[in-house]
Image (cartoon, rainbow, N blue to C red; front, side, top):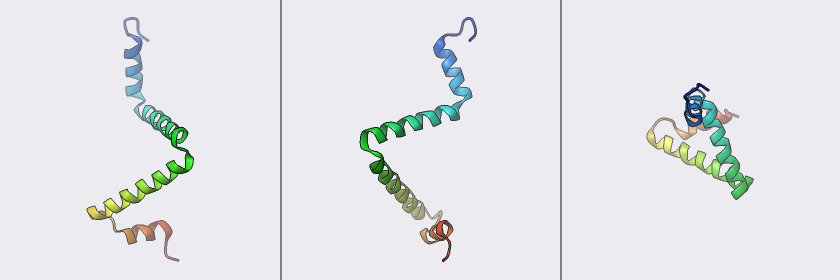
Length: 77
């Protein structure tokens, strides 16, 4: 820390330099709190439903067809 720099200015500077790490830590903190509050399996179900909703919305946008995505994920058997 420089002589005239306050602690909060130092934190802001470090957060700017390490943006990805800060975002990762905050996401992990939010995930941990959600698991503590609601439980592991409810959060897993919520994540799966959000993913399904995202994929359906993406197919409506015309970016990908669900059949193609299914084939890419699981392959032809």
